[in-house]
Length: 243
Image 1 (tube, one colour):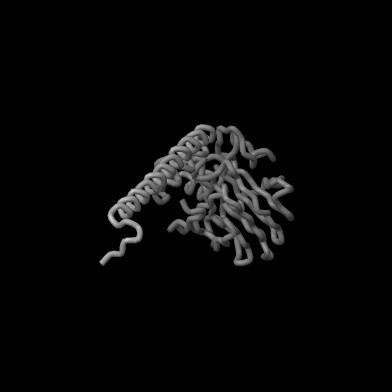
Image 2 (image 1 turned 90 degrees about the vertical axis):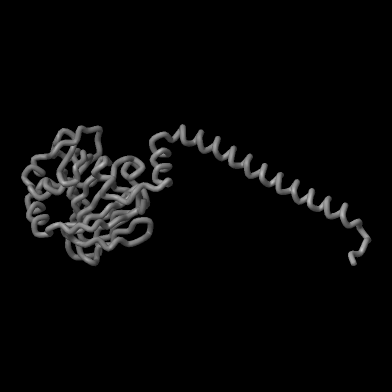
């Protein structure tokens, strides 16, 4: 699976911003080692549907719609269109001049069975979102998947705040249909994430068998070379010139 995917979807920016205008209860994203400046969020789904300061943090669930989401018909319509359960859904605002430093979110990605989708609502060409060192040209109203298990960072070098609709979706058949088909590597990544100890044992066992096979093949090739050389020496004794 690619680290970033821009889907062939364009949402109505005017309707997105109309719903955004209803948001007021913003809370600081308090991870000081990750950012410089002002980074705030407001919950659209949260543990038990609360809107307090803890509502923007990950929790054990169940995740429920907040009062704000129920007042935002377009946001609700978008979420329902995915046809899946969600974890956190937030509006995330990065003020002008602020920086989110490079970091990883190791519990959110295709291997974890939870995918993070972004819809930019307010942005500008002076906002720089990097994933795996590559800048993603996110424009208002687009739908993006970002594998935040990979290194990512944001710089808002513009003069206005950047606001994204950010949804963490639990992967089901409907979500899978949005994405390209899984590769063998994707399946291995899921196995590694869900069963790390078992995967390590399997990898050690498989690696040992592969090494044995490689060494065995090397030994067989060496024996064949010796056999060919012996047959040549028997057929043509040393010091005898061929006519």
